[in-house]
Image (cartoon, rainbow, N blue to C red; front, top):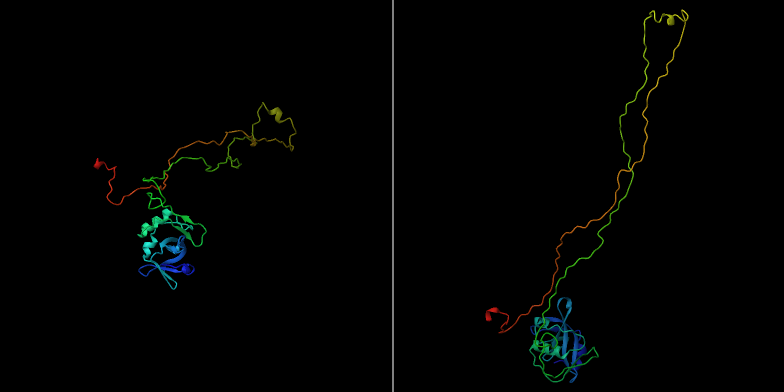
Length: 265
């Protein structure tokens, strides 16, 4: 049994189990307000000491810097998850006593954390209770998560229509004509003799002919060819949604008959 004067010494000391294996560091000490004696301690267990478990001090022994409790490490580690918030409620106290197999005193007892100012009082009324939590009625409510899948509109992207100018080569063939000089010779006949002998007998002369030809001429005009616009259309596809949901189930211990079993009807 831990004495009042050992409270400061036991805090932050090492707790060991009945098999000699180290359980963890002692955290808080809870006192019985009627006697002023230490009644409970919390021990940091689990990975990196992140879990805090309650252990009764009724048969504990503190020697040197070592607190030894009459339970092994697994027993302490699996104790009911009770919050170390400076006060043990009557239901939490009864739950812990039941777990450790310690006789439960029905008298009025207060338990206060030595580092807290709050004191709780245990009601002596004999009521049914839930061994895993606060007092309830005689039934459990089972709940489950349900998934409701809907849709919502969101922006998926943007499209732009932009006009720009490119240059390409157009090749067309067009017929063109040109004049060429053709020398025509005709013999002297009675019909043209007068014209042929109208000039001097011997002289120098020069005749000139102007030649013409066609050349391609290019003219460009701008003509509308088509109109282009952006529009949207709606398509529908299917997507599969995977989500985990939690459901509460109930199991029974002992000789219990399930009323929903059709073979019993």
